[in-house]
Each structure stands twice: as C-alpha cells, then as structure tokens.
Length: 270
Length: 264
Image (cartoon, rainbow over all chains, first blue to last red; front, side, top):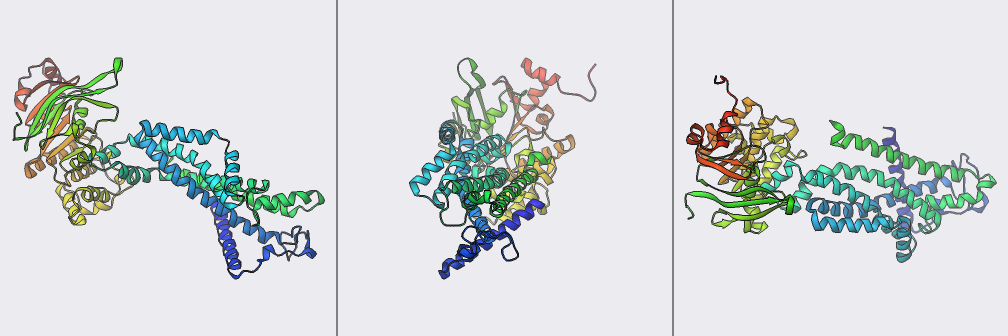
C-alpha cells in the first residue's frame, strides 16, 4: 500500500513537472528551475529552498521534480517501444514454433549477446545525444526479456484445451493469439512493465551521469554528476535528495511489481 | 462408391507421429462412415487412436502429426488436402467438437456469453447475437442469465452444456464428442447424454461419439467401431457388437465393464 502511495505521489509530481515544463515552453520564458542566481550558490536547505540550491543558485527541489517527469517519460516511452516488440515476437514464436520460433530465438539471442550498454551507446551516437537516443537505446534492448517471458507463457497456453477448442471453432491463428491467449498472459506484461520501469529510469540516470543522455534538462543523472564535484566541500543536499528520490522511485516500483505479481498471477492464487 | 446417405467418409486414414525408429502409427488405416442423423461410437482404450482419428477429420491433430495417407471425404471434398482457410470455414460451422474436460475448454478470462457469441460472429454474422445466445442456452436447458458468468463460476455439467450450446451455435451437420462425459460425475453424465440424445433426435444431428464407456455406447450409438492400436478391429450395429462380440479385444472390453451383480 505504501509503495502504491509513493508511486501515486511520483506520478503526480511527474504530471505537475510536465505541465510546468510545457507552460514555460509555450510562453517561452525561463522556468524557475532553470533560473540561475549566482548570489544564491550552494545554499543549504532552508525555508525558502527546502532542498537547498546548486552551484548556479537553482532550487534543487524544483529541479528534482522536473527530474521525476523526465524519468517517467523515459520509463513510459521505452516500455511503449519494448513491450509491443517483445509481445509480438514472443507470441508468434510461442504459438507457431518451428522456423518462426527459431528465427525469433536467433534474433533475441543476437540482441542479448551484445552488452546492453554498448548497444545503447551506439544508438545514442547514431541519433545524437539526448532523450531520443535514450528512448531508442533502452527500448530496443529491453524487449528481449519480455519476449522470452511471453514466448514461454504462450507455449504453455498453446497446449491448453481452450486453444484447441478455439481452433475447433474455426478461429484463425491471429485471433487465437491476440484475442484468446494474450488476455491470459496479460499479467506477465503488467508485472514486467512495473519491473522494467525502474530499470529504465536507472539506466537513464546512469547514461545522463555519463553525459550521453539528457543535455539541458534537469535530469537526475546530470544533477548527481554536478553534485559529486562539491560533495567533499560539504554540499551534501543535492546529492542526498536526488539519490533518495531515485532510491524511493525504484523501490516503490519494484514493490508494486511484486505486489502485482502476487495479485495477478493465476498460479499463485490457487 | 460415395454413398450419398453418408455425411462423412473416412477411408484408410493414417496418422503418424515421429519418424524413423520413433515412428508411432497412431492411426493406422482406419475407415468408417457416418450416415445422416446417425450416431457412431468409436470405442477403445486410451491411446488406441480414437481421439486422433476424430481430430484428423478437420486436420486438428497436434502439429507433430503427419497425415501419412487416406482421405476424409466431407461434402464432396477431401479434408486432408483442403487449404487452411477453407478448413477454418468448415470447423465450427459444419463440424463441431465437444471436448473431454469442459473445465479447461473455455477461455478463463471471458464470459460464457462472449465465447458463444464469438462462434456466431465467426460463422453467422447476420443473426441477432444476444437473442441467439439465449436461444442456444435454452436449448441446453440453461438460464439465459449465465451469459454473464465466467467459466470458473460454473460447474462441470453446466460448462459441458455451454460447450454443447457453443458447438451447436452454427447448426453443424456433424458433432464430434470426444469423451464428453469422462470428466463429469455419474449423475451429470446421464443428463449430458440425455441432452445429446434429445438434440440428435430434435435437430437430426449426426454424432461421432468417442468413448471407452460401453454403457454410453449401448445407450446412444446406432453403430460401433472398436479400435485397438490404431486399427478398427470390429465394426457393426451396436446391439450386434455388444451382444455377440466377435473379436477377442471386444470380448475383453465387454468383460471389463463393471457390473452391479457380478456373474458367478
């Protein structure tokens, strides 16, 4: 329940951050979280700036909230890329078997054999630094796991009598796969989504930290990277709060994923 | 030699599994035909090839199976050589199946009504589906409110009735019942069998009944084929086969029937 609450809070923050971003973009003015004020460098947390300010005098809290919105975009868009690909290939491989299966297994083995980070770096180099590279890179590498899971589930369901009954009714393969088997493996997709989400966020933070991710937006990775320089000078707040935010987000989603699995997996129910 | 009275003719059907040393001849040269409105029973022990023969009528046998020979003539066409798209038009519309275990023959995530409607959407687009589902459920003596029930909310007997309703949705010419009562308890078995009997008389349905229960055979079937190890070893009118079995295997089957008063 606590994790659900946390996820809800993060979601609200993300929506709020996105609205703030869009409004400022629309009015073409510099938003508060981008305003630099060199008089207010490295202010510790106070009533004016709850989480202090960074090296350019920007409010850490408002940047943190923008970071939530970036993290959500990464989580959702990479899932939107990875899940359809994984589900589609997993379904046809599991259902048809034979040559189709061989091809899909070959395809995902090829993807899986490349170090994911290297692949993401390569894609980021091709499409240029920034969010697009992150979306494509993470999206195109993570469908493998989903594909494998779905393939296994579909193979299991294919042998069930209700599939045979559907065939005996004269249904086509496409309809059997997507109308009959897919709803039965939906829980796998939902659970995988909640577990992929924090992983994608983590990867984004990491890539932005390395400098190949987000460029001018306040991403958590960039903030951690900036904060690490001043940490030894006693500027602890930026690092602490950002790390805490990443930790809480990842923890909340993982707990939610586990809870969903307990609730949705038919095998654990009975 | 096509007899216009018979609805389906199976000639020398051979279905094999595996190859080389592992070759299993699941169905090894089986021939039978079913007349209009007739109920034919296919009897035999587990693994004698009766289910595979029945599934092969519309090429539904598992993917690993190879159709090594023979033909299945239905409506003037050989089902074994028909392309998949044409087969799908026959499955469910002209030849329907009822399976052994009603509990797992329905998709667990959809309501009964949805699943019966699907059969209608597929083969009979013009009918009023809601009314038709209600009519079908009434035909198998179930209340119409069950359309909104999910499979796990119903009993085995109710589900088997729904299965029959679904199979009858497109008024098929042939109903293949693959051990329709094996998974049900005895009193429910009786109800289902009476229902099938009633329907075959009312609608003039031809039924291929697969079973290992000779009680069902004597009750329902007009003719019997006894199968052993992929071959038909005895064939004939029900009474004749049951009263005076010729083949040793049939005698063995007869002797295995449990009796209320064992012969001394």
